[in-house]
Image (cartoon, rainbow, N blue to C red; front, side, top):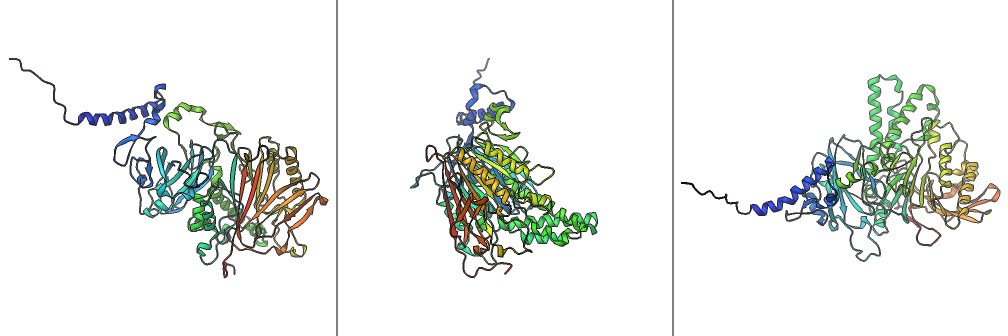
Amino acid sequence: PQREISAPKRPEGRDRREERARPLLHAVIQDVAWAMGIATEDDEGAEDESLVRDRGGRWVNAGSAEFGFEDLRRAFCVFRDGLFDNPDVRVRIGPVVGKVTNSSAVILVEVDTACDLVLNIARARPCGAGGWDFEPPLAARGLETMRFSASGSFSVCHSVEPRRPYSFVLEGLRPDTAYVALLSNICKEDLSRCVALFRTLPEVVDSLRLLIVSGHRPPLRAIGAANPWQRLHDLARQGPEVSVSLHLGSTVDVMPAADEAAKLLRDLTSYTAGARKDLERRARETLRNAYWEAWGRHEPLRKVLSEVGSHLPIFAPPLDIDMLKLAGYADPSVSEDRHTLMRISMDVYKEYQRALWQSCLSDGNPDVRVDARDDSVRAKAGATRIGSRGGQWEDADDREFWTRHRTTSSTTIEEWHMHRYGNICVLMLDTKGALLSKLGATSTLISALQLQAVNEVLRDPFYKVLVLACDIPFMLDMLPECSPAGMTQTPLSWSACPSKLVSLLESLFEWKQKQYPEREVVLVSGGPGFGTTGDVCDHKLGLSIPVVIVGPTLGRVCAPTMWLLQNTLAGGRFSYVYRAPLDRWNFCMVDIDLAASQRRPTVEVQMVDVPVPQGTAWPDG
């Protein structure tokens, strides 16, 4: 007899499990389809269908899920692997925030042990004003109070060597968005300490807050709350948010390290090839350790580099340029020592300072370049995702953000660089490249290529505000009795080259006068030991330009007894006058607003000074 066969009974709960698994499987299939390039237009919203686990362990939509800082450690919440530690790895430097645009950012990191370092970028959700008239600065928002989204967050892993900086370039970020950079596979103490905060710029820049700093030379003893870098960080927490930080003097105390490196390389030709290679390695490590002492071990400065704006350093190699012109170094027998020292110093400068802004360019050669866009967006954009201007990688609207430089010159050292932020141009001049190109045997302040770049900027009708930055003052004359014959030949201000200074001033004032009052120029520079503000006037055109001298932010201050604080140029056509100088540690905030007035840009300068504690002593007495 035939036996009746019934369908097997489904285990209890299987339907519910399949229902939970179906959207996860669908998301996986969509990711594969996008990767293979066979996704259909109906799948345009696939990036919004990715799933993450909420606090209860349930799979939820990544775009709508919201997480706190404590959730970042958990896997499959914001990051696939969460945040995990490695007790054997300590962070030496970073994360340091380099140049930031509306869609890209540069992050620099260095650790003490070889490892597979993981850089995690978490997108922070906007917060309510909370009593502020504007979105509070990131430095004022504690990590514990922040909320994060899995959508727009990502991780990248890279194998790193010990005691060497690595630059990460993040592209495809969202405009006007706050991000938090965290590291994994490092010791537990550094997981929450070594964190960077940055905000991408809006697609159209109509205002910019610049922080101007110059000089870092710590005293013999720690000064605690009196530290000006701590004061700067506290001020940044009060807002408005700093967009760009300009370093117009070295933020590394390089002299001790430069002297030690020079001693290691002395009489280099008398050693065998293997010994010479080892001496060069030790000299390089000595210079790298100078950056570690400043950027990694000096805690207030470390926090400023990680949390206050994007940092653009001026050309300041870890080298004593005057040392190259000493009588002993003029001997041809030691020329190889001198060239080797300069080569190593330039290599270390490129690893740290230049990498903060050049890495984001197509010729910058960063260690890691990450396309942070969702897979579907990347697939739809295809080869047109990057626009081009002068052969450099930029967004399609590269008219708003652009970087130009000439660091690839084969005949001279050219370390000037120009940065466009909409109608605002920041031009960082190089007064040391010409000296290093001739090993001190030149009287040229800036090169012909650099002068050409300045003229090209002035011919661009797009700019409304030009910020011209230099490591030495533009107008500052030394008293005749204070200029002994044996004094250093390195120019201490543009006044040492009056013809070039007059030519520059003529060009700047003529540029401003052509579309006055729609154009403005600001001259900012490092100082010889004091800070002040003033104006330079063109009595022929009846216009004036604000001038700012900054520094030292931390270092030995001096009274302006050697300098003329007012003088005339070009037979009386130009005159400058400075306000009472600050014999304190100082830095400066420059606020540029293109939308405050219908036709005239607004530029406000605020000097901030910090008193030097009584009894502060320095290594050289």
